[in-house]
Length: 213
Image 1 (spheres, rainbow, N blue to C red):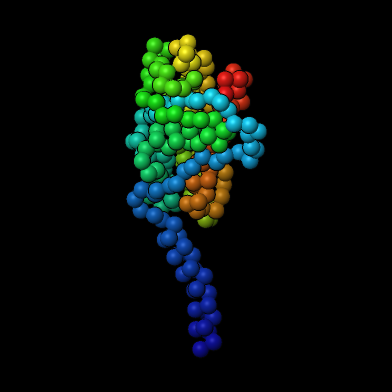
Image 2 (image 1 turned 90 degrees about the vertical axis):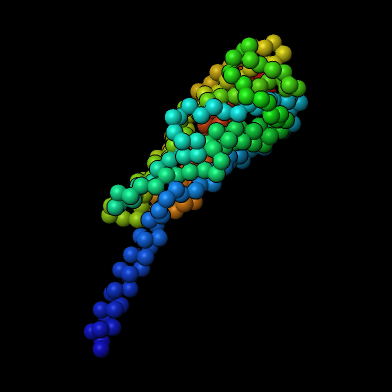
């Protein structure tokens, strides 16, 4: 009887591990909630400038809602997806970055990113851009519950002066993160949100745009 109890006692941790691994092996697309993470510092005074934001173009060559891939030890892969599209996510994040800094935002129609295509529409500046890279790779270790996360965001940002109808800046902003962590959906979301936020925040370090804002 005692022997049977000991054997059962050793079986429980193994059973729990099996259940844990099974729970991590999500089938089908994994929906992630990615969001802009505002910096801790606050803007001293609100800007008087109105900035028009045109929807981002998605130049990644990937399905519109797919932003990554997860691979588990068995080799099974799942797509990482966002509600809506990656272009909508990037556009919303740029608008949030502006408003969190006290800058008024106005939605403008799709802009072709040329000087000739600039429309005033009640804004002093217009921002638009293209998504070059927006991707998260999650690769689980074969010997542990850890997973390697690699997040990369690269955006091309174009800024136009609506009064003079000219391009004033074209910026390439990017962020890449690489970590080994204990897997959870929240960690995937935080990693890609951080990479996105870091890339967008670089816009506000550009000296020409800082003067315009």
